[in-house]
Length: 194
Image (cartoon, rainbow, N blue to C red):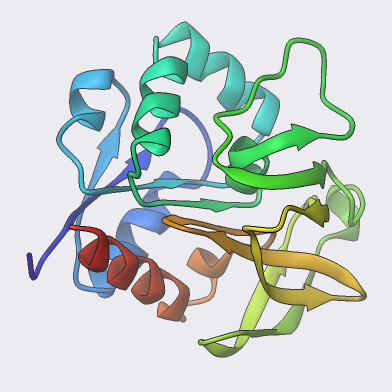
């Protein structure tokens, strides 16, 4: 498979930016809102946005269980910011009723880097990719990881990028920078998995 079909979970968040970045990384990118659309993709990006809202909308649209099943079955998945939270096995400070998809053995803290007005950009050294400009917007960080989870990057002493099997996650938003290397890494993961 030379050109994988990669979906972007299009319930809430910065969907358009991911579609553009995936296309620039040589994938066919399409929005995914329903289980039948999820069934047609080779990989999935869970974008940044508001993790509580994404969780509630995923439940409302009947997507939570199909997402969990596909991720457990090995669907390559990449979560940015709120997407990282959605891929966590545990949230330290979940909002009432907030659920995750799981898939990465990690414990995360929501809004760990501060509120909206404390958002910032920083260069982050990502293992296997090199220095990338990270845009941190009400970003989470990873408090701890399990034995199977590889730490790819840290910022300020906190874990901000991880990988476990076919799952990749970053606290920051690479889709907002015009640098598509994180998306290219994910496209390569999707190709390798097929």
